[in-house]
Picture 1 (cartoon, one colour):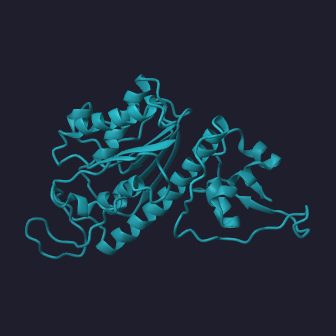
Picture 2 (cartoon, rainbow, N blue to C red):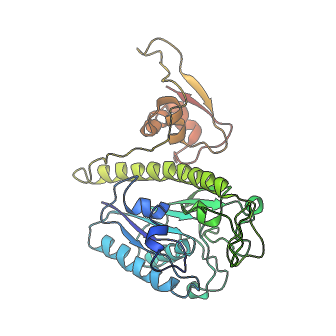
Length: 328
């Protein structure tokens, strides 16, 4: 009952695009390597000129709307990398006009550098029908990657209605989306150099191919935890609304190791006191649950503690540094 509609990153490639982008994060999600989507839909990203961005956005909109209006999908996840991110931001805006909500908008270094979606260097506000945004971005100042590219997906119609999770990574624009560079050469000449020089830019980045692969992996590890958490929240909500709906999918988050032991409580689990966790910047409930239980789905166990619920408030997504939570 949860579907995924996505547009991947920009490239001039035609014959080699499929091979180059086969392990992009958008492609991984399309293949349901993390969570199981119903009839996921994927489109290669726009060409370098960007003039086809709107056409691709319209195709994505048609699919997402069709899944919703046909009743096949009860929740929509949208995803995009680079200009593909700009495309799905527009899709969300068009869906709002139809009264259709977007459960989650997944962006990997979204940029809009074409007039076909509004204006050059456009930054369409994310529509307030979007419940949650997960945006992995390159750290422009530290990496010097794509200095000519401005990000989009940074403004919102109503920040009180859209929950944002955003993080910056030491990776190139391509690397953040799962397509890290394998070598560093001077454009046109092919002369090997130490750091990656992206075609069309005036100078090389500060990122070596090795660092790009590391930063890319970090981007995926961060994003997939948030995506799996958003998916599980959505699935639980749909099961309550429709008890005969989707069954819980069998999925896991690779490379996530438990960071703590299961703390016994004084109610029959060994007589020991619960632990206290002080929230740090970058924490979220599923991450804390992985740390203490090795299971992200235990976030609700933490949230349902009355004292924790009083501290956090009505929205379990919004925890703040300095808050102290009881780990039962």
